[in-house]
Length: 535
Ligand SMILES: Nc1ncnc2c1ncn2[C@@H]1O[C@H](COP(=O)(O)OP(=O)(O)OP(=O)(O)O)[C@@H](O)[C@H]1O
Image 1 (cartoon, rainbow, N blue to C red):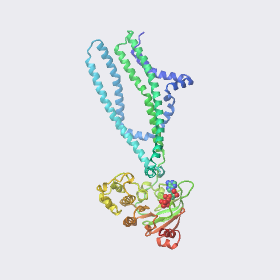
Image 2: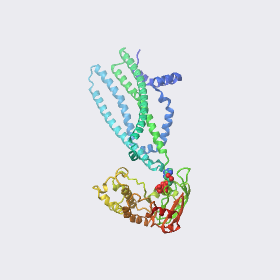
Image 3: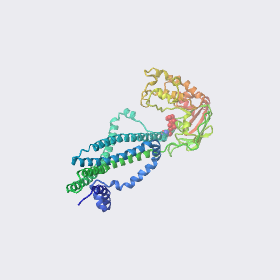
Image 4: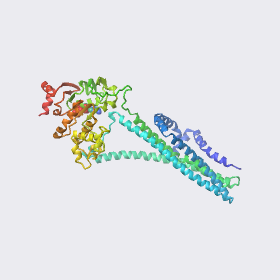
């Protein structure tokens, strides 16, 4: 019986879908037993629907990224396809050349041009491979940059509650390193166990797939060898051609288990990425406007607000700060003073009532323009792990060196900076850990001064300073507030006796207002606070 080379090649190609189809026909029970035995080799097939639904969902979500990547790297994408195609052509041609060389050599013919052709094909293939990776990495760079930027920007748009807390200092204060290490150890164990189980499962699957492939390629090789041996048209060159194609054909199947695992892992990563991207971000109304560049009044109209459902923190807060006026807000701890500035900057939205700037509801003002016009010095100061200069310059990235130094002098931090050998290039450490509380506060005051905002919010701005330093910068702070609409949140009543008006917040309401003298004369809540303060 004479079997042509084409029959062998096409027979081998056809065997893969035929075998797959055959196992789909056998009964469920047998299939289940087979699956257990061969490490769920059909997992890919049976979960194809879920995978394709997930993949389609992720495709539609990431379409905007893919479209952008296509626009920016069209040429490289086309080049990758061309290079891959060229690779396939060379892969097809090389075994044919080898077959001819073997047949010619067997016949004692010196076929040097063909050998040189094989050499040239290999050189072209190597160059093709290099260029293909080059284009691929260019696409990958654009894709990763786009995704990473998207995630980074998204994390900045997240609402206030997604904040992360860095507790490493607390762990040290309570000498709880051992406890934390054990807790972390348990978590790592759990993770590693899961990883191990997944790896074992993957190994089983790869083993089953490779075993099947090895059996089929061995049988096919055996039959081809027999065909050559039995003296029909099957030459030594045909045999080499057939076995090379067989290896090339089965190679992708050989790595199917690995590819499948990687694909599933990529789907899990994508799921996590899209869950993160689905988290609610701050969104302005479509008709949101920019805050006008002129000084305006700030009005709270019967504002009600609570962080949760159960408790109202602000229960109908009503006040107006006139344009250019400096007002202080005082009240017991936890009465909601900082909440007022968080609402004013739209980190949270009021539940009832409204906040207006110059008669415009702040819901209709874009958050970016709103925050741009406020200079804030708060009790929780966040500094970047960079130089002092970078942290001050953050108030105005375009500011000149002189302007940075002027702002530092006004915040009484210039001399301290110059006492370091690195001067303005001194590193502040993680979250400004190398600076004292008071120094951090002065850096943030310099930053606010440099910003030259229309409105000022000071939330316990000098709480971490000693009396002497506080006096040194108090005049500058007063100067900063003087020409601007300003709200000062204060614990120490002595720091706000000079302001135009003081509002007293208690139990969610403004219970008293007036200047320092007027409030003392009322002999009410403020008077009692003042008495308490001066004891
Ligand atoms: N993000 C939040 N989620 C839930 N409750 C919060 C949140 N922030 C503050 N609170 C609660 O709201 C109330 C008011 O807090 P706020 O920080 O406005 O008070 P405060 O008057 O500025 O206090 P202090 O003078 O101590 O700084 C407190 O009872 C506080 O526990």
